Image (cartoon, rainbow, N blue to C red; front, side, top):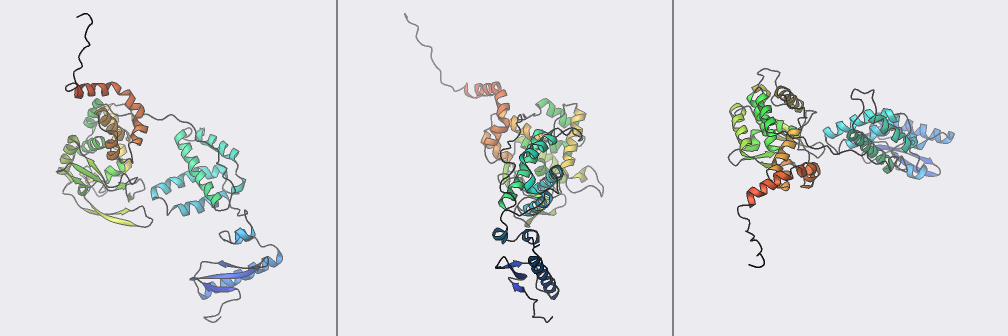
Length: 423
């Protein structure tokens, strides 16, 4: 075959090879998406010959041969058969460029748990609403699992995630309707915040065995930052003179530096109260003059990143001076230090995330504006504060009355008693 010759029915178009053939009286073209090389021309010619033979024999399945072809709308509408496993693989691959690596990891975990229950080899169009309701029940009451069944929140998340996958199937012609339609989330009680009391906080700090750990949890409670933001904090983000701390990055459980969780969280300026400043001043003696590292921070746009210069505020090497200690903490390590301090202090068990709730609850008790608290914590609006802490706020009504008495009693206008009749 000469350099410029093509097999019958093979042609070059738009940077790649395509084939053409006659099907049901129409001349159709299918782009193969491969570069124009001698080897690829030969393979394309063989494919075209096989397609033409299958058409003549009456065995050609257009959807099976070209599952992504726009021509399917003409020749076999509504017949894009695909298995549940194939759909999941396709959906996750396309989601990769839309969401963060951390979110993709969660989606993949959901798929690993749910797809085998549906049946990876089943055709998507065979899945019914009843099947999904039984699967939801199984997820909730799977007592064979180590946890003895998943929480309502977890099950709702699993169902919502897979519902998105089936909606993708509807939008791309694999299904006419989504079998998840009409399945409502399971009802669940909103978990109340469980903040530390002031006495418990004092005991927690006293139970920390190293000054750096004391500084870390003091800063966590007095600022309400997320733990991924805490371990990614660098001295380049802090201005002790003005008493501010800027949250520029987050560290994920996958080991990636990313932007903070939401747009409202990114580059937010936290105004430090005096105990937080004191904790940072104490910590500065240990790490302020440490090594500066060039850190790749992934942006929200797929494939893009920036470099941050970071002298990390909290360094494992302060406590463990060996080659195995990294330059910054992992999120799991921070949680482990919380658990250890809780046990040593003899405090009722709480998850480490309660450090964030403690900041919000203490701030509300002190009379701080919910909008200010929301901005400090990285919420888009005060609505999140009301949603999460509304019930807790009502429990503190007496504290609010006492605060108002202290602040308003001194300058409230005097209301004279009404005159007594007959005098």
